[in-house]
Length: 375
Length: 195
Image (cartoon, rainbow over all chains, first blue to last red; front, side, top):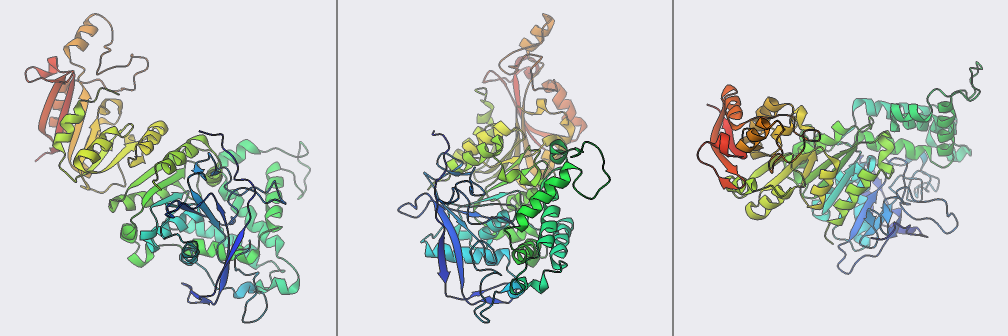
């Protein structure tokens, strides 16, 4: 045992793919780039690679920090590193920014080769399956035949699940956290509110706001505020903010009065300052479309029959956006197929965001699971 | 945890390659054993985080579930055997879980400490709650919530139309043929759906 450490300074890398990628929407990306980071060393027989798939607002920057930004730690830095659950002394961990993203991989802010202008709203719809197909090409490029594990939370968990279906021979373990086999109507509804906030922002300009030199920050901010409410639990929000008033009493104003208002506005502004609205639209649609059972008449056990990986499925007690019941659907469908599957429902008061936190029981379980993966 | 000679009996009742569900599987050691000697496709059920962790370390499939609420989600007749080893006495919903066990599996294997064991009776006669190898806890910290004898369990099975296909009773590992309700500390049952 060592004290958990950071992977330290990391440098993003970039891979260019000249071969067109056919997308499920019917479109094609003629060529594309993926930006990614790696942590640890690929072993001699290339058997220790772990792919970490990001969620809605994540990126390839999973762990460590950049030399010029020591405080900008990766979004899953508490999970990945020497002595951490996903121990980079054993595993070669890869984070990759998905297609359509806004952190360096080809996306709406990239140049459309056909027009010489940013893709904007013309960027084709991308699905979880498309992302996985692109990730598989990156795996080919890196010489990884089979991942020791593919891991993700939320939308990232959908990618891990999809990996096990699209490339069953290439995934030894799928770790699906705070995720779902498909969104519920309520969940899609939240995404639609977020999208309408962006689409109705006067500065959206049909998705071609780059050409107008503006950004639909108000819509994006609203979208994030709505999302943020759903990522927290009622209890956690109550404990943290309650009905605390900034001025100690009502001042009858639409300025910030309740602390929760301040928090949501801050989170919204922060997010709108760095995230791309078109990427947000695309990623929420990818969430909505994901439904591997659809082609099997809604029969999830039939859809998961293709999977051969061993599974760890994890949910959190207060996560109502991706509730434990959704995770259990995955578990029972895997059980039906006699796959190796373990399932834990972690007690946590932090709602959906729990998957990003280092709650002791959660990380102990991940440590135990990763430790027994043979590489 | 050393008190596990019922494993031997259970193992004999499991055919190679069966699908097995172990309710209250603890650290998963029985399933691990059955995977080794019977090549079963096994799943454990636990609701205690520490035991989930122990199963994971043992490389045993474990599904977190509150068994008191039944086994909803598991298909009818999916398993060949469902096992509940020395856990029935720690459940409130005794009848409900027996129904559920025989719903999800062809046969159920249940073992429990016999409260009617003579040493337990002697302890009560002496005015103290029994503490023994099969009832190792004190009254104030026991996880057990149901205290019943072999005869009680036989009566429950009859009342619920549960077929007792085989029953073995033991006193600290020795097979007891005569007067098991008096002389045996632990009983192991093989149960099926009644006619």
